[in-house]
Length: 417
Image 1 (cartoon, rainbow, N blue to C red):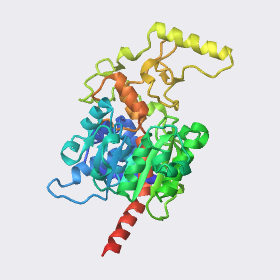
Image 2 (cartoon, rainbow, N blue to C red; image 1 turned 60 degrees about the vertical axis):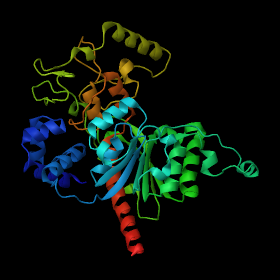
Image 3 (cartoon, one colour; image 1 turned 45 degrees about the vertical axis):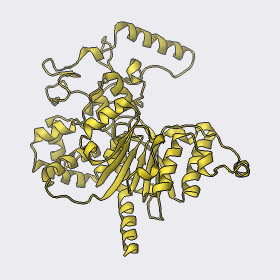
Image 4 (tube, rainbow, N blue to C red; image 1 turned 90 degrees about the horizontal axis):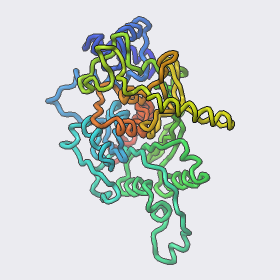
């Protein structure tokens, strides 16, 4: 969506909500919102929140309508990929996530799921035929090496071959078997950039070969950096596949040349930090206008990190902590952030020890709006956001994928008539 279109979306939201309400939902202060209005601008990061706010006011609960497409959410984590596709008309009909803490966060934020569709833990034991029909399969599957055996030997022993032998025992196999059984119009797979080089490139080559030649899908992939949408350098590979030939291309992505800076997601100490009832002062003290002191590093940990960094600098290595300011773009938030926070430490002034990001700031860094509930401990929250996707990246990928999905669905409906 272009800047002018997002500004029009903002104007539509202002017809339904006050500036204070919009600013709070977008995690911004009033002055920032007023600047958007005056400059006729609106960042891509705010698009999903504005759409959600508008739809919640303008939709008629008593009128049921068909969604634009149905999706399933595998290895769902806390629902980041799904969230990007729902903005463009997707309705989730099946979810699988094995981690009990991620399940808690997911179900807290998608409360209607228990009534609408199955939510299963281990996808490995679930029959593909029992999964509801769907149009797009979404999966952020873990990266694992494949043990590839000779097909001729498998044939001589009467054993399965193709993806059944080359990927069995890996979690990608679960994705492949569901695609093979249910034949969705499209899929979107997400993984770390290192998937390209994992096991000297063999893992990725096997995945692409299975998707293209074993399953027969038109497949494209691209590494996208989240820094276009949030103040975080986070490169992830996305793999898009279509059951039939389409005009899809990743060249249609609209990636802003200049992304936001860290100050846009940090807690505001000028009195404009939104009051979030579901956080209840857990991360930010509104009375003192300060981040809760427990997020500041202890003297012992700060001394250790400085000594550790100095040792590696002396050895000519680049290891060390990452000290950031409001003008920074951070390193990649990792699932181990809960240990010491060393990759992203917020400076707090001369002579002051730095602090970790709070879980709410991590949510913002990943592109989740402030109405996203964090019902788990800080340790689990850091793990969940460190393992998640940048939501606006998924939203932009969904924007260019969904017209082709809908075209395939319309074509198939016409062919059946």
